[in-house]
View (cartoon, rainbow, N blue to C red):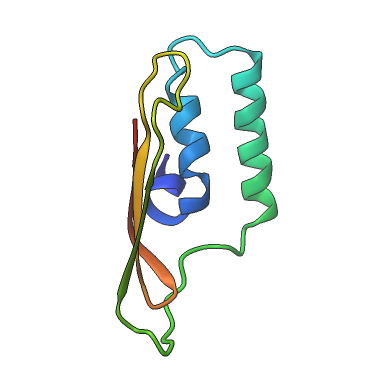
Length: 94
């Protein structure tokens, strides 16, 4: 969870979805966790980097879907704020 929250935006969605099943994980959930850990091991040198570019202001992105979580028909929304080339804030919520 620390890697997702503090440094690795790219695994946030996978960790968030799998964590919904922490009380009773199945084989497929463990396979996803194994895949995420393998991905992290292969991308140890990735992380949040800040360096100046021509657009040094804050840029924001947002997205949502309508009833994309089929089991309970809830929507997911999220945002990401970037400064320079690094993400400074992000959220994904069911």
